Length: 304
Image (tube, rainbow, N blue to C red):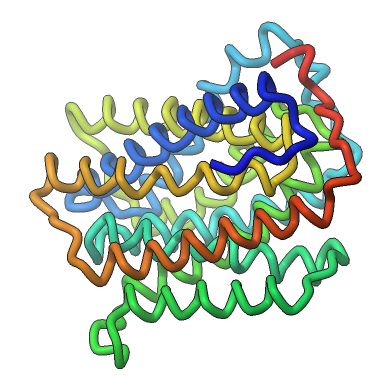
């Protein structure tokens, strides 16, 4: 992984540990969602993911107190909530319609979308090399989808839509991570998505039974730990140092998909994912070189 020269090794080690935990959690989430998808409507799973996520975030508040939930950006959190409920729903439905590794490979387009979103929303400058890398990354997406769009499916469209919405969400996290405490960023997301997902969940309601409750509780806990870890990584370092670690999800999910569901990723998925990953890592490298004079200060390092 890249280590920007302005970030101390000790900080990069914390970033690596946070993202390793986040990737493991998000990979397990994918497995649980796929497992529950055959029995429960995905929007119902979204609802319970946030319900139990609210409960799971409470222990994180014990050390830092409820004062850590204060924010001066309520509108941004509401927008994040709206984007997240649609993005989560797309992901939860999409991953039940295609192989897990292929879905995760397509989700890696999120940093590519995020680069464009950062230009539009944050006014960041993206020069020719980064635009070229972004286009190459999207070419990798076509390879995952298969040459000629032969296997372009509803699942693929849902995953790509979810990646786009989560990219905008990621840019907002990048903005908020220097202004709000990580607890606030995580709590307000699940707190807002919970009621926003309630209405469609009621319409398509299916009551969980037996061991499904344990899977849903585990989903909420794992999702909260993963989200907390990711937000803390963004608080410790710039996105250029954090994003490359996210690609650990592919081998984790590929292994889980093989062990739990007998899925074997084909060559096109690995080749396309490699191109997407290479493009995103190059974009991170270019951003690191451009920002080398800027020394980011972790706003919450004392409490991490």
